[in-house]
Length: 370
Ligand code: IPM
Ligand code: MG
Picture 1 (spheres, rainbow, N blue to C red):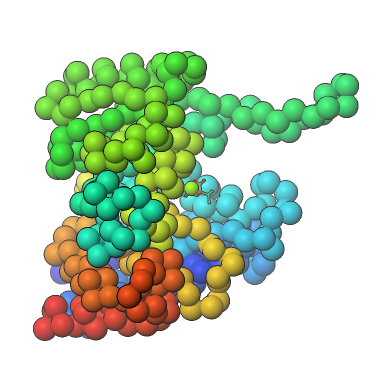
Picture 2: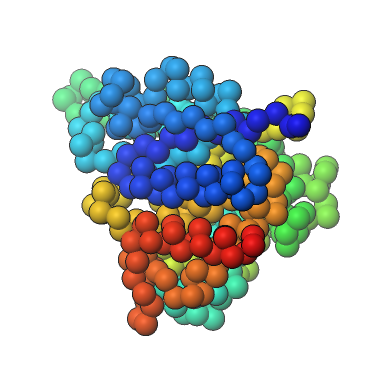
């Protein structure tokens, strides 16, 4: 018997608890129907943790996260905590998880489901069949660079400072993840930076090219300035296979890529660290969407990004590709059947709640596994 699979669920804030509730139901389903058992613990992160425990991520929760095989996170943040000092904000909880677990590779696949082609704001022919993977560096760059802060100047002005900084190893390890993913996909990597204005971008370009020439010549590599990439993503997104980029550009480009698919509510993500001696990586899975406080608690949120994030956990952490496929197919079939949450609603479809969408996916799973 393999050791039990340890999951830590951190629902977080806003719509986080609602969408993670649907994930919990799919975990229960797997337990019953697929004989795959998880040890599930839950904890607090973000505003919920601030309110109950006085900080956005308690040390005890941090430790549980490090010991879990995978962390499943909902979302963090909300207007209630917006005025807090920077170090105490809900977002710091998530950033601490990423940093301390060394989750440097953030995989954000943007996939357009056939049934949702009409939900995109772009023309159908531009997005139909789209399947790109954004690999975002997640533990370096301007998110964590020093010096940082806001300081008072002698003349009474203030100055805000952040630092973009990357080392050779930080660039190489995330680029390697992108090249390896490309090998299993379309064998093309586009690396994005601003080498025309930033030294860190010059280094990024050089190191990615060097790694390519040393170890990944079977993959086609091209370089693109990040602003051009933003433009190309809406002009002709299908030109891309894997995009690798830094923390800040990745944050922006992945939101843009998400909207190509019709809604942020559809996009899952995986954040991975280095493999240990058993080949297992520290891992956190979360929807790309945020806490959406405006619709929280109203049974309106789309649970699909969270369910697809769980499918990524099955695929990347637990080697359960068949079960991951099952969940992804169940989602596709339910969408093909015409059910839509509000964010992906289109004329002629049936608008349903979070819970109803979750139940429809469970019913579909039941049928497929029968
Ligand atoms: C994301 C989010 C986070 C980020 C926030 C919540 C800190 O926008 O995961 O893309 O900026 O990385
Ligand atoms: Mg973001």
